[in-house]
Every structure is written in structure tokens, then in C-alpha cells.
Image 1 (cartoon, helix red, strand yellow):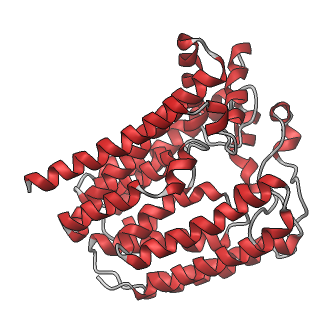
Image 2: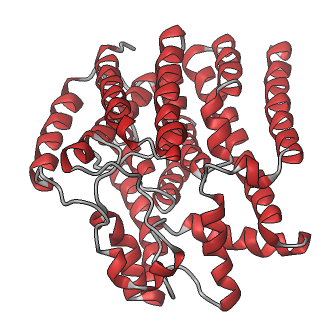
Length: 385
């Protein structure tokens, strides 16, 4: 027991040290070259003029990260300011969240499979490239953190804290809300759980809506108006670009919050929602579920996979919250193989193809990824407690 505990500490020590050395060694401009840090910096710098997201301009990101980003931007000024200081502080912040993800992964794995498997999955996650690089490119480690922490609190019997984490996660990115269908099957008080999530979301969203009015409303509704990108739906629509929304200046114009940047959908959104809603309901009723932690993880993975197949858009950083769930659902070679194949396919798409204007390769990567998600859906239905 004591040796295994020390192994946990060793994994975390090496995980954090490796990333700190990267932050200290590489130029921020090189480390973040293909990511969104510079875009986040431009948005945060608007605070110098007194402009605040959701109040003075609309934001495509839900509120938790934009306000965190402004706080990091202000703190960076204590270290000389500029993009380099901001990028290093943001990278350090994402490292904290990602180290939390590693710790939570091992905690959850120990609950499901025991200590040996927990150590194994800790080493596996530490050596994955995608969570490492996207911590320097995006804020996706936060999304994974809220998902995993909500599950850890749930399995610890702290349902109230779990619900608060889902609510905070939903105000970072909506994805953490997808744990709800699994959670309500095991929590002791469904109404209390759902109410706590609603209060958390409502307090944050309501405060911003009162303060920002139209800008806040546009921020919350803008994802609905976006064109399809990097999915089979985007291929059908003839949209071969990324989900980037354009210049910072456009955020002051409400029209851009509701104006699609690409071609309109050829497949009616209401019909697609109906088809996938019925599919999910069928799978939800048929999937094996015996209230064990692994069953909950499996159902969360199934829910997210159906969402990814339905979604009109795909962002490669979404792998960051998907990979820990795959490892917890399939803790052997098969799970690692799924992760490696997804990693290669998505890196081929971004930055290799789209980052170098090779957009004609997009159909190949999109179809490969969609096929993998379909196979993952089959795996979810095959899992037995």
C-alpha cells in the first residue's frame, strides 16, 4: 500500500516537472503556435480599456474561462506583462487543472479496478501527447477537470458538491452537463441534484444577463448560430474550414453573434435532433447499468459519443475530456489503441492539414474520426460491469 502511494506521488511529480521544464525552456510563441492562447490574450487585453465580456462585447466562450483569462492577464502585469508572461501563467494554470485530471483519473481508476490498475493508467495518461499539447493550446483541461471531479464527488457520496461542479463546468463549456443522464440514475435525490445544478448555472448566467443585457444574451445564444465545421454535417454543407469566428473587433457587433460564417445546413437541425434523440433514448434504455461506478463512466462516455456524432461542429481539443473516460471504460490495450488512433487522425487534421491550408484532406480525417466514434459507441454497448 505504501509503495503504491509513493508511486502515485512519483507519477504526479514527473508529470508536473516535465511540463514545468517545457514552460521554462520553450518560447511561449513556439509552444502555443497552433493554439488559441494568442486569441485569448487579445480578448483579455480589451480589459485595459475597461471592456468586459458579456457586458461590453459578446463572447463565444461561456463565462468561467473569459473571466479567469482576464484575471491571469492582470496578474501577468506583475511579471512584466506582454504575451510571454500571460502565456506562461495561463500554461501554469492549465497545468494545475491537468495535474488534477491525472490525480482524479487515478482516484477513479482505484475505485473501479483497484490500486495496480490505477498506477498503470496514471503512467499511460502521463505519456499521452494530446492532453499535453492541448494544455498549451486551449483551456480544455478545465472541462475534463469538472467532469472528473463531479464524478469523484458523486462516488464519494458528496452529491451536492458534484452538482456544483457540473454547474461550474457547464458555465465553462456545456459538455459537463452530459454527465447528468448517468448521474440521475444513481444519485439518492435526483430533484436536489438537478436543482443544485440549475441554481449554480442560473446564478452565474442570471447575474451576467442582468449586467450585460443584449451582449450577455448574444454570448449564450451565439453557439446556436454557428455554421457546421469539421464534421460529416460540415462535409454535407460544403464547409471545409475550422470553427474560428474571426477577429476580436467583431465581438463588439451583435450581428456577428448570430450570423453563420459558412453555408447553411442541408439536413434540418430539428430532424437531426429528433433522430439522435430517439437513438440516444434507445441506447440509454438498452445499455447495461447496475449502479456500479464503471457503469456510470460507461454511460457518460456513451452520452458524450452520441453528442459528438450529433454535433454540427468538432474541435480537436475535445479529445482532452474524452480520453480519461475511454481509459476508465477500457483500461487495457484496446482503450489505448482507440486513443492513439484518434490522436493521429486529429493531429493529421489539425495542425497538419488545416493549419497548412490542406483543407482537401478534411473529408478523410472527418470520416475516419466518425467511424471511430461509431466503433466507440459499440464498445459502450458491449461493456459489462
